Image (cartoon, rainbow, N blue to C red; front, side, top):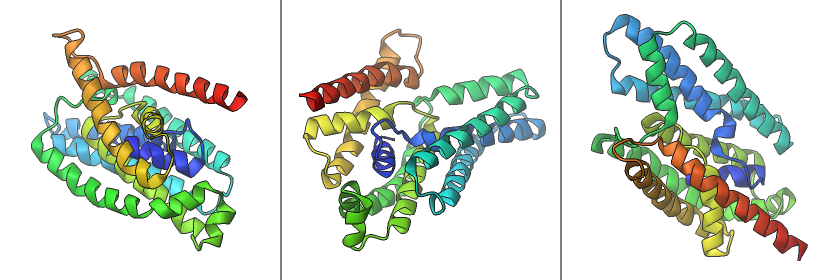
Length: 266
């Protein structure tokens, strides 16, 4: 999530952009709602594999919709708005379906949308690693074009970077990373926005070749810390992981934004 946040902030050149502005979480929830309603009508219990597959498929569908506009829209602000609108559309359809769902289906959807690592198994970790490790390697080899892109599109083109292909790869890698997390753990909010800022603060650098591994490792540390807090703070009641990540991440981002503004004024 942290690495996908860094990629999407690079893509939009916007420090408050997050991976779920592309509608990834809303698309996953929409497909999960459809699958839950259909599966419970056919079976007494919905398999965990069906939840994972539905979440992943919904995330990738939202990603494909954004990719359709990536080559046609040059204004990043417009593309950001399109991603938000796709998210609203998926949320609206999901709310409509919930009106026709059983109470148990609504509970399952609500539990998934809160995000949790408690149901993770080693098999899921292995499957995630099979997806994430190749994606990380590809992203690391994109560090040089990313550095050029951050200097401006004109500068990147002068170095031979194909902007269209580069943007598509950034969105695709962001979607793969985010959808994998959404499929296995649900939407974990604010990690993609807060952790890249924390990484920059620790490194005192925005160089992609440093930020890519730093975001990956800081994101892991941040999630482990928040998951521990979610389990321990009000034990035996376990909080939603998204509640803790938002409570910790939001003040950090506000403080960093204010600090940057003061620095710029000076």
